[in-house]
Amino acid sequence: MKKLLLVLNVLFIFLFISCSPERQDARIETWVIDEQEEPKEQIVEVAKPRVYTARMRVVGDIMMHKWQLWEGHDPSSNSYNFDRQFELIQSELQAADITIGNLETTFGGEERGYSGYPRFNTPDSLASTLKAAGFDLLTTANNHSMDSNAPGALRTLEVLDELGIEHIGTYKSEEESENIQLRMVNGISFVFLSYTYGTNGIPVPKDLPYLVNLINIEKMKEDIKKAEELSPDFIVVNLHFGEEYQRYPNEKQKELVDELFNAGADIILGGHPHVIQPMEVRKIIRGDGTEETGFVIYSLGNFISSQRTPLDPPRDAGIILNLDFEKIDNEKAVLKGISFMPTWVQFSNINGKRVIRVIGNNLSDEELKTYLSEKEVNRLQTTKQNTIKHLLGDREVKEENGFYIYKIE
Image 1 (spheres, helix red, strand yellow):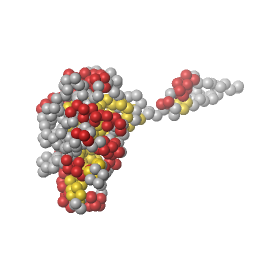
Image 2 (tube, helix red, strand yellow; image 1 turned 120 degrees about the horizontal axis):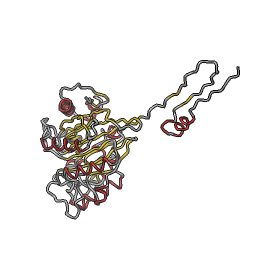
Image 3 (tube, helix red, strand yellow; image 1 turned 120 degrees about the vertical axis):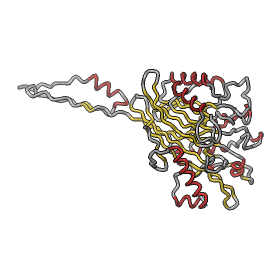
Image 4 (tube, one colour; image 1 turned 90 degrees about the horizontal axis):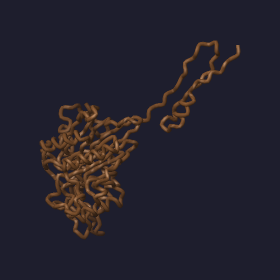
């Protein structure tokens, strides 16, 4: 009997899949079937979903006290270089897809005179160091935003713009302050916002009300609403708030965090206390009834400074917070992993030269002996255990590549 070529009705499906960039790996097979044979099942290989991943790393306060200025100064050329302060940790900052820090100083210019506390003004070369170390985004809304007054705050943004370092929290114009932007990181979308409780009593000029984002819950809710209109995967809010040197958040911090989660924030990153405060994972019920995961760390501590205190609480301790995100096809991305690397600031005098630099959990025992004295190694290890206990409590302690896992329950 004459064989009949039976063409499966798949032309439309084939064209649709062939034209889609996300479905180019799909294959459709057609079969020649003898009319007397039993019909054979069509076999279609379904395209694998496209998976996007992004890694964010966040550190706390980047400060420049007078001792750090001295450390970075070269008297022979009257120039400044701060690279050594980050040289042993920059590989961990560069390993992320986006790295964020709180710039708690200003670039007000040499003519103002460089200074540390109480009104920070740092050489522009620090910005170059931060760029080379791996920082992509700096929050500039904090209590030291106005240390060089309005001209210094504006000049700080110019210095960052020249280097291509993004910034949030202080703005050159009203239009810029109201322009909520979507930032794509490996196919996952974020909106970043930043606010501070105040500016140490230095007033923001009345004719520049947009210059510094101050904590105002109604304004913050408006900004989050604008952000939601962009349909980001995550709305990240940076807050400069709380009480200095307190190991735990106060009630006002908790209330503000609750309000922001209810308003639509997904991730809240805190700073200002200069010591580490706890982190939490929240289950949030959105207005449409969907359940999502929220994350807050109340204070990331000091990343680099010249503050030194005993261990309760340590002001020379900080962390690199690591957040891993995943997105499948066009679904909303999710927070897949949370971990942190304890850090400590070395403050030494080696062969008559002051050494101030961030030491992480990424160095071997032999490397630590090369860079630190026995006393410093002991201090580092004690500080690290203090940080782990403070952030993990009774949770299981599990380490991967120097980072300790904070499980999402």
